[in-house]
Length: 229
Figure 1 (tube, rainbow, N blue to C red):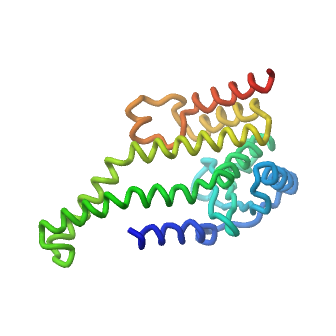
Figure 2 (spheres, rainbow, N blue to C red):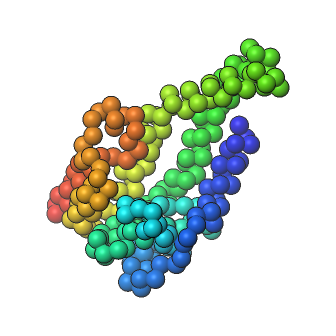
């Protein structure tokens, strides 16, 4: 368990160096906005990169990677191809900065460590019935138990992920103060990504690692009403 947790921590720290086809953000206005938003969210000196993916997909995306001195925001070049306004891109950047501000990468490693405590114990117990992991016939059993635990824990992992995404959305709204642009962004993302605005409950529970588009729009509208008051 400590070995896997350590590897996950190292991977999270070095992840910015493992992403291919990246370059610095060249749009001076968006870069300036990103620096301002990073200061507002308490993660100043966060780098922003662009990943070239347009050869493979038209879907827009972004991610927050690293922690400490390696923290960075990576925007797909499909997000910068003219389909989204500057303010909408600012909301995306602020969302990813929110992940960094709330230390979600480190928290995911913590959740992994908690999962590995019962998982490794159950794998060891199952393997022991076949003579222990030193025997070849025990390896398939150990792998089966580990995969089964991953499948069973998927809904719980999605709950954690949806909470983190909602937290990052709220951070973006507080940093940009532009709920209308956030709402328009979510509507545009639903169209460009062909995502169901409100998927069936079973699909949401088993597979959704983000709040639904309807939920994200509702949050933006709630923030707008709060701002007006």
